[in-house]
Image (cartoon, rainbow, N blue to C red; front, side):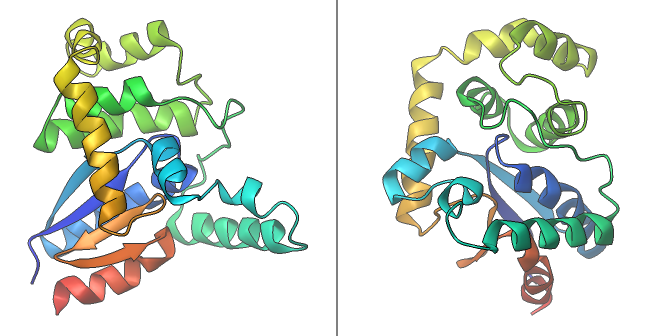
Amino acid sequence: MSKSIELIFDFVSPNAYLAWYPLKALAEKHGVSIEVTPVFLGGMHKLTGNAPPMIRDADVKGKNAYSMLEMNRFIAKHGLTKWQMNPKFPFNTITLQRMLLAVEGEERNKLVDTILPPIWEQKLDATDIEALGKIIQDAGFDAKSLFEKTQDPAIKQALMDNTDQAVARGAFGIPTFYVGDEMYFGKERLSQIEEQIQA
C-alpha cells in the first residue's frame, strides 16, 4: 500500500476545495498522508495551453451545464454544502501559494485547512491581505513572518519550479494527484485513488 498521496494544489481552483475534504477522509481511512505540492495554476495553464473549464467550454453547447450537474452531485455525495462560488473568481493566488511553500508537512496541510473555508465558504477576497492575515494569525500561525517569506527569492523560485515540474510530469490542471508514479486528474478520480492505495 502506498504511504502517501501527493496533491498538486492551488487555492484558486474550486475543485481543489471540493476534493480536499473527501481526500482527507480517504487518507485517514487508509492511514496514508497527504503531501500538498503548491503550484501556480495560471502558470500551469500558460505552459499547457489549458484554461478554466467554464471559460474553455463556454461555446460548447450543454457542456458547462453538465459540469455543474456533476459538481452538484459531488457536493451532495460528500456533504460539501457550505461551498459557494467566490465572486472574485478567478483571483490571483501567488501570495497564498508562496505562503504554503513557507511551511511544510502537517503545517502546510493545516494552512490549507485554514484558508480554504474563508475563500470557498465565506466568499472572502483572496487578495485581501489584512483579512487573510487575521485568519492565519487566529489559526496559530505567525502571519507577519509568512507574508515576509512570500518575498523570499528562494520561495518565489520554488513556486516556479514546482509549476514547471508538475507540467513536466504531465499535470495540466487542479486537482492532480499522484500515488507513486500514477497520476490522476479530477475530484471524480478519488475512487480510483482508493483502489490504487489498496493495491
